[in-house]
Image (tube, rainbow, N blue to C red):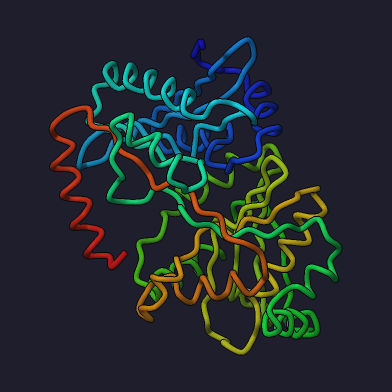
Length: 342
């Protein structure tokens, strides 16, 4: 095996297109987005006669320490030896970590969570990270069936609310890729963050995400207007034949108006037009966590599951210690997790 840097966008994207397990956090443009946010990005490819895997490395400069992040990867070609690929990935990561003088490596796998996959990381000296990086449990929907069949498969209440939204002449969905329209999303987003007690992404973050995917027509803002007031919004990423519901918000000012439901249905229809085969609702909570009514994702999980679909659980994010400072960082992250009730 040979591992070397990939600089050609076409090579990277063409490989990702044929891979099955993947998310936009390993797209070429996600690397571009992170570069705009001030992080160093390295794109690596593993070759064995041909390209068999790619992995995106982001050097994170956090107040608690520096580390290398591999977000939901590596992306591996079908019928490859996954353990061998992870071993090669770690070997290169350790080499880069030494050069970049970081405290640890954090790898969020795109491997399905089962005993054999967990053992790959355990055998290599990884330990489960105290914090998740991206969703480790996602909710996905196969959208290859016709529109009516997709509607029919939804929860009865969800289907009813979508139809009510379609009938409401005062409720309209506006599509945009312009930065000027992102401010409407941001206004509702801040209201959502306050209601659910989480720290929202900055406007700079949202603008950079939009601009990074806009040039390749891979992003869309959907604003739901009720009587000319935006009350729900979403930013959807379309990448490698999959649509991702990455950012969402609702004001709940008019709780009886099913704006969020209509936004999702319009996003699904848009994804079908773009020849996507899957709609990824992004993260949900585990059933055992939902036994506590205070879980911050309880309502969101119920909402997403109403559209029908299936869950997909990946191996937890894994850490690999480089310096002893990592243990201090780990304690800090555990305490922060407890404080956030996650």
